[in-house]
Length: 73
Image (cartoon, rainbow, N blue to C red):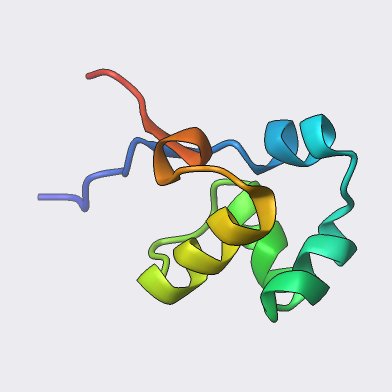
């Protein structure tokens, strides 16, 4: 059986735009590389650490549900 594609979507672009923040600025605030945030932003990430999710939510002043959603079946 082939591996199942995940349906989790990351709304980093929208949150950055709403806050007038660049990916580089967010990377500096969170302590994550721009490359790693880019992977997350472009829905290519396979996982995210809770510590990174917490830091993103703190820097973006949001809840995990603002940052992530799951596409319906």
